[in-house]
Image (spheres, rainbow, N blue to C red):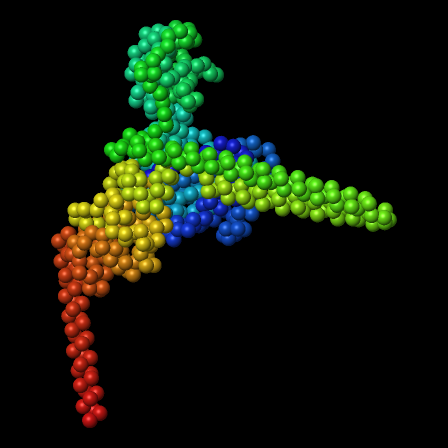
Length: 545
């Protein structure tokens, strides 16, 4: 289990209402939100609780730090717990962090393979109106995660706390974006040579060969790349801290820039996708070019919009000036002219407001159509359009073994582009594609989750939905299926297959025997029902005669 407090870097961005709006937005997905829970508020109604929490935060005028704590609890891939257990775990985390009596709204999201809970906590105490900022929260969270994993039988995750903030941020960025950070690149490409430098001049030469430069900043050193990206030297390795370097190489000596290196001997850091078993060079080049083109189109559109807005404002000013001149030439009383001037001025203000409003709408529309997309977001967008290569790259990021309920083939012959090979998915309603390549789409009234190797089945899935999932599995994998998951799920699948007389078999012998037994019982029951119906019909006929 992973628990993480999402930091908000600026108080200006701390908007509790905006956070709840994002968490409770279904985003056109049928199974994104499983539960919304309000705690420690006078009302369980979401809107009433939101108003109460905002009022409580507004009553504290002294706090300068963020007033909202955004905690995320994420279960391992494929593992599920009942909502009652999730609620108990949520309360334990809030108690451990000192937020037991604080107001909060929790939202359970089930739109990815990892079931996760977002907890939006008001850090302002509801009675004392003081702000609470937990200390050593990473250690508390890690210890509690280990306890919960043992108690609920969840997969054990490494909860070793990364003390250095820069390293932690770099890891989070790489996980979220799929792009290698400067810190990781230096460790991979240059760290060994940097450690081998015997004096400052040698160190400067090594750094120069890798397109880097070391500079003093604050009480330490930073390594700066040619593109302006920088990382704290001690985050790369503790031996590069200011104290360790000056002790080993002496007092810091600036680079004299006297030696020029040829381009062929110089490496440079360029943000690229993390190393992958699939060659992403062509896709990434296309991604970068599309982002450049999109930024150029956005700039051109914004320039046109500003020019159009300025022209309309100038026209409105000229019209207002013309109206004033006309009013000035009218021979009438002073009060009448004053009323006409006021009317003309009000019309001018209304016109300007409409022009600016239209400009803002067009600006936001252009911004949405040409927004900058991250690498993984672009891959998901391309995969949704039918790009099989992009889908394969996303799926190659998957790590670990899926342990949830699933339907698959004994030996899956499905290729990464299997979704688009036969047009089955193309003609269906694809809701979303996750950053590890799980496709969520509609098959009739049932939502299907397909990661290329299996169809993922959520707990408490109805029999009608299980029937639809089996039908999709037959189209995708054939008639011989592998069923994995809890024992109750496996038995339920066999029951659904027998009840609907599906021509499928299971690779697990005991489960296949159980299905055949159910089929025989169903056939016998059907035969008895037919015989009974015939007997009843015969008796009725004799009586009528």
